[in-house]
Length: 314
Ligand code: CP
Image: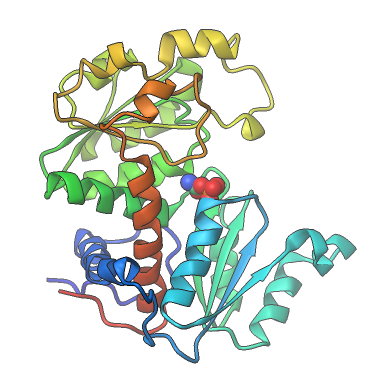
């Protein structure tokens, strides 16, 4: 068996083995009870420094990385890009080298360009953690989604998972397809033809099924993951109007009824209520959306711990 997780950086799911993924998830499951204590703090990362470097907006990922660091007693620093020297023209590399000179143990980076975390990992002495790079990957989102699924379904192997909507622009979809197929799930994707890239065909051998309609994708599934329409990444019209999108591709109670009776609903957030997901689905007992947020803190505690030298649970 490979070691559970022995890397410095977490750049994506693509290069991780199933054993490494399970190692991170088991470590996160071990940390879960810390967030349920009255005093939500342990000394595990005392003396370590974590820098959050977010070039794109975020509520969930940024806050949960900060909370994760603080719950483990690390010093957490958020760099505000809009008030930083990036606005004076400082390059990405110079920004990274400047922060690295302050001896952080981990740099958590989100950027609109794919590959930025990989670039920083080459020049930084600190562990680099990808908090979302363009349309490429969002590894901690896929890990927290996997933790949420394991909490409800125990095993991921053998599950049928539908990933629906704006697949083309979704780093969440790319990381989840990698993770879920590596752990033995069957993944179906569906959405408007313009938003389901042919490039995903290479994953078909690994268990990915591209279905012609959202109804066929949902039929008999254990997990329905609905993606946000990423208007900020769409520079042309991929579908006629948002209301038509809601009619043809939105997750409604009627469509959800095609899934298994105990199927759960995931959405990475933020949601466009009434467009990709109906409010009565988002707020239903099937929805695990707030549990995803909760496990986001736990998974990020595990990732910070492992990236700064901690040993994964076997
Ligand atoms: N799911 C996610 O990445 O949300 P934020 O953009 O709020 O971090």
